[in-house]
Amino acid sequence: MEQFFCEMPYQSFPTFSLPHLAALAGIGIVCLSFFVFRSRLRAREDGKIAGGMLGRIFLTFMVFQQLALYLWYASIGRFDASTCLPFQLCGASVWLCVALWITQDHRIFEVVYFWGLCGTAQALLTPSMDGYVFPHFRFFQFFAGHGMIVVTIFYFLAVRGWRVDLSSLKKSFVWLQLLAVCAGAANLLTGGNYMFLARKPDSASLLSFLPDWPYYLVLLEVLALAFMGLALLPFVLPGKLARWREFLQKAKGDTHYEAAADSL
Image 1 (spheres, rainbow, N blue to C red):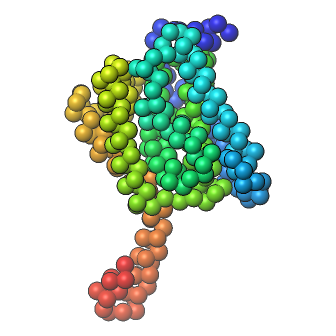
Image 2 (cartoon, one colour):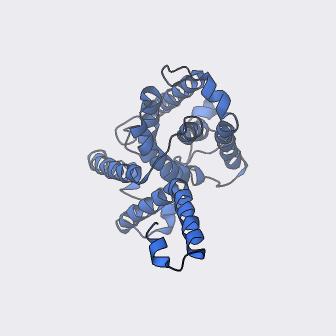
């Protein structure tokens, strides 16, 4: 048990190793189950805080795992302003998810959706957990915390049927800039590396393929906007395809293509 919580020498995380794949598979199965059992889950929602018993379990678990991380930081002497402020994208997303479960506010969901799918998903694929690997506490806490962000998003997508649009993307991107300003200020004051604005993470990640600081910061903005656009596609593409089918049907029986195109 002592080794489970102890501070360890830095180890490179074995990406897509068996424990990594098992963690990803577990998160994926939970998310898929929301679509399979969404009718039953909808029927069990009671209108109270977090919507139902499952929501209250998720809410409690998210708070517990984050507090457990703070307690672990304190136990190894690392609980300080350079590591524990909620200015990492995923750390901020955890507390936004907590607020989402409590308030059931769609405006929070709009932000969490893009931050979670674009930031948290990338973190799950290329974890940066300070050199701690399976079976350390940090491994389980990392995938529990990050996984719950994705689980929350898919719960509200599948069970609640919530959606996002282009205005949601704009709001999310603006709030991302505000978080980056706060993270940058925190880095200057504490010597931390929130949102990896001060330096790249030690472990391999998408940032490893980008130029050195500060040039990669500009590319991060471009990539963030591009990934958000990809996350929006499932909501805008079906409508676009339907309009194109309508256009093609009109075009087959109408020689005035320009008039048909105006309906797009």
